[in-house]
Amino acid sequence: MKKILSAFCLLLIVFGCSKNETLIAPAPIYPNPNYITYTILQGQHYCDKNSFRPFNANQMAFKVKFDSTAIYQSSNAANQFDINKLYGFSEGQNHHINSARIGWVWNKNALRLYAYVYSDSTRKMKEITAVGIGEEISCSIGISGKQYVFSVNKISTSLERSIEGPAVAGYWLYPYFGGDETAPHNIFIDIMDAI
Image (cartoon, rainbow, N blue to C red; front, side, top):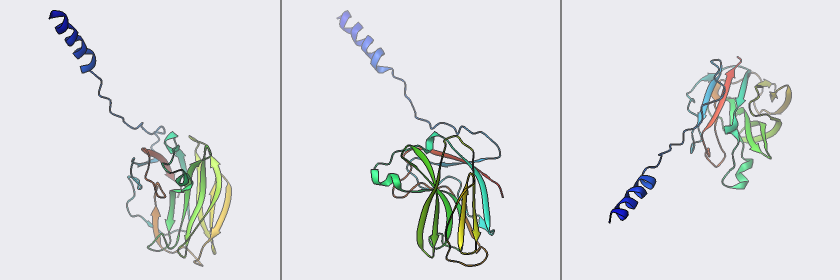
């Protein structure tokens, strides 16, 4: 009986005591007071800092740093091509009518940045360039007549703008994950406004 009781106590100690691990997302790797860290939580589309902020300019410029949380695999393979939104602005009060943003996607083992617009409710996009994880990336979006002009690390492209003339008052657009799927894990993006 003592052997059975001793064996039971030993099993209880071995299997009854286990470390309760809580998965905590890693802290952003760029602690820099000039950058704002935007967090898109697992299972969400929107970032944590997305309050309404009017935009009344012809151009925006910013620097961005992505860490390894920008690497992801979509649940549905077709969604791997969906463009996530980084930063930009609307013209008017509905960004699905007129807006310009830089988008991003992890695809073919690279982080790719895109020009992404709505022009008179028609969505258009064009790849600008691939960038490195951990790299400080200089970006800008501007208006030139009937064009939105995008620049990433001095590589430029443009997409059609349906409005003619100076910028129409709108609002800032912040990091957003999707497409169809929500963030598969916490995603951290560091952005520093240059205007």
